[in-house]
Every structure is written in C-alpha cells, then in structure tokens.
Image (cartoon, rainbow, N blue to C red; front, side):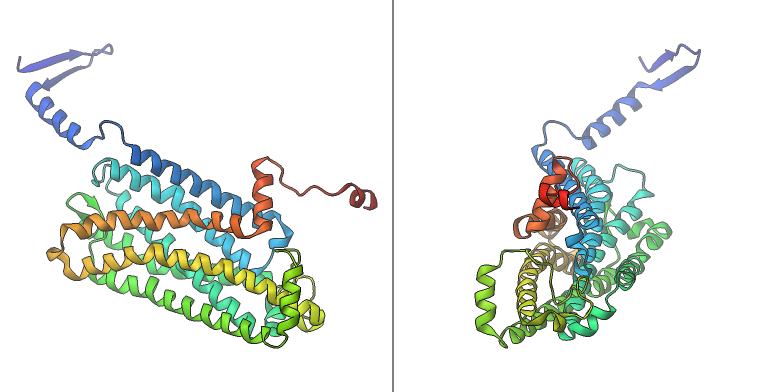
Length: 367
C-alpha cells in the first residue's frame, strides 16, 4: 500500500508516504540510543555528586563564620562555576555521547553550550590563579594586606575574574551565530576555529597556569623563610595544635585588625602553621586541576595545529580528556572534606538538615 491514510478524532486527515516514513524511521534508529548504557549511568552519578558537593561548599562558606575570609570567598565562587558545569554543561555533553557525539538538540543551542563550557573552565583556572596571586601578596606584606583586604575588595576581585572569563569566551557565540561551520564538524558540536583555539588556550589556560604555579612556589618559599625565624617554637606548636582550632592566619585579619604583629609571637606561629595547612590543601587543588585539564588543552592545541591531518585517535582522546576535566569540578568538595575539619563538620550537619552548629549547654546558659 503506497499511502497510509489516517483520520484523527478531530477530523484531520494525514497522508503519509509509507516508503518515506520507513526510510526516516531507520535513520532515527541509527541516531537514537539503544540498549543499556552503563557509562551513562556512571556519568549521571558524576553529575549528581558534582552539583551536590559544590552546593555544600557554597552553603558552608555562606553559613560558617570560620570560613569568612578572602580565600574561602574565592573557593565559594569557584564552587559556583563548578556547580554550573554540573547543571548546564555535563548534561548536554552526556546527551551528545548517547547520540554518538552528534548534536541532537536545536542548533542554536550549540554555540551557547560551547560558550558556557569555555566560560566555566576559564573561570576555574582564573579563580585558582587569583587565589595564588592573592595569597602571595598577603604573605609578602601581611600587615598592609590585612588592613586593606575588606569584603568589598574581595568581591571586586571575584567580579573581575568573572568579567575576564566572560570577555575571553564571548567571541564563541558571536562566531557560532554568524557561521555554523565554526561550531559544527560533521554534525558534532565542537569549536572549529583553529586560531581562536590556539590563542584562547594560551590566554585562558597556559598563561594563568604558569602564573598560578610560580605564585604558589613563591608563597611556599616565603612561608619557609618566615618559619626559619623561629623553627623550634613552630615545630613544637604544630605538634600540640589541631587542624582548624584557630582562625588566626597571616591573611585573616577578621579577629585582629592589627595583623600578625599584634598577635604576638605565639599567634604568629599559629598563623604560620595555619598558612602551611591551607597551602597544602590549595596545592592539592592546584595539582589535580593541572593534571585533569592539561591533557585536554594539549590535545586540543594539537588538533588545532594538524587540523585535517589529525589522527582519529586524537579525536577519541579529546572526548575522553574533556570528561576528565569535568570530573575535576566535582573533586574539590571531596578535597575540602578530607583535609579541612570545618568543611567536614559543616557538610555532615547539612546532610542531616542541621544548618547551624549546636551551642553547648553551658555556653547557652551563659548567653
């Protein structure tokens, strides 16, 4: 039967060509996901933990008074970027994987998705770079830094980081809306502008990465120099002090506006120990970010250089490396949980729907 006549209840008649319908049905079957996909289930778990973990970080910095300092405000803004990766970037990438890396969504969404992807990855490295610079400046001149490091100035720094990230990423949707060939390669939604990839990777990743590593090294060197002033006291004090018992820090002037000099010798030792612990945690964050994102950016640059002469293995690798980078967005909350008691206790309370620390009975009676 050549034609299939269908009369709908509201008296609308449709004529469907049977052969045309059959051919299009076979095409749909080729593109739609079939069978069980266990990697997709694993990716869904990654998305869930990325979103939930970073929401916990944002809540902790917002609620816990012990975490109200410049470094943690930067970490909170970084958690916002990582949470948005889980909300907006990972799900679209998962859908693309289910359709064999073809783009099943409306084509207008492709340049916007690439824009958000580049924006959040750029914001992540810019935040870490800003944290490194901020801590190095504070260690170099802690008294001047503590006096001028107000919440308002910290917010200005964070807004500047986001502004730079947006400016660096904004050409992507402009290019994509003007020419679809810039964001589509054989039906796959991917940036197809080699010059922009080379320049953008350098400005948005490699240069900030070098600044971050250099500043972190200089910070550790200066901390070592400060510790050398009273090595015996520092060692004995660090043995008897537990993690996060004191909020006194070279960079935290909240409790004493006079800075470390007004805290006395013992306060200075405690501040140095806290800075070393904070630097250890941040060092792990920096290292994991470097390890997880460097393979993607290196492969991306190689593809931009070789273009049509690239091996098929490079394209397979970049699909894998991009998800390694995405996973880094969910790793930071785990690091804070393992190495910071304040975060760990806060997360445990929030998961039990207890958003404020219990006040001891004697203290409550005194109040």
